[in-house]
Length: 121
Image (spheres, rainbow, N blue to C red):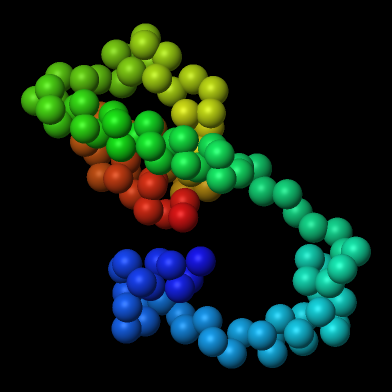
């Protein structure tokens, strides 16, 4: 995953860590029987999966597009009344706000909204 991000955002690995050499650290975790790093250990299941993240990112991209192409006329009340954040489409965003300890943004053009698709990758 780090290689994919680096190939599009940070080809010189000036910000992202270089993943080469991580194998030894992972082997050490396995040999020490660190939870989640060896066969048969208990693992955590994250509250969100790729489905919620990808669908949420896509929906918020659509919302931003609609907001800006309508000259800012699309409001959260409109979005809610149309059911655009029900189910899977709002799950990841709600979880993002809780993890980041952020309040719901007042409008779709709030800086928190474009942070959501980037930070959940």
